[in-house]
Image 1 (cartoon, rainbow, N blue to C red):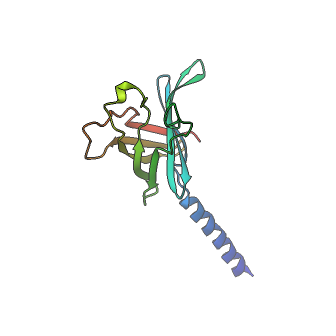
Image 2 (image 1 turned 180 degrees about the horizontal axis):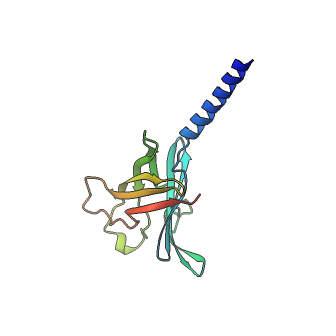
Image 3 (image 1 turned 135 degrees about the horizontal axis):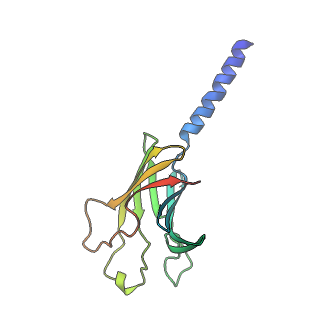
Length: 164
């Protein structure tokens, strides 16, 4: 009887351990504050991969005003929103991820943007600490940069804190 209890307890803790190990530590909401601006990233699971959106807000007297967001309509003539602009995968070390990000924070209907083409960049994150959970956030162009690539508007090299 004692052996059966031991086996059941061992199986239970093994399942719990595997479940917590398999969870992606990056899923959730991340923030970086610079003065009265907050850059916020929302990462979630979609079709067995990590997807996400970002936003920049300005806080004045406790009231947030949206500066830009990636979760917006494609243009003023369409109600359809952008699909997630962050598409990354958890690396085998379980403390870093990498993949693509599309900086769609610009006003693409503006004449100022007419000279540019949309261009994906790479995104890398690595967990630095837990309690609170912090991680590096690094964005850059791929090795081959098109001549008409827009400047990257979102933060490129920061430390973010997981808030949810």
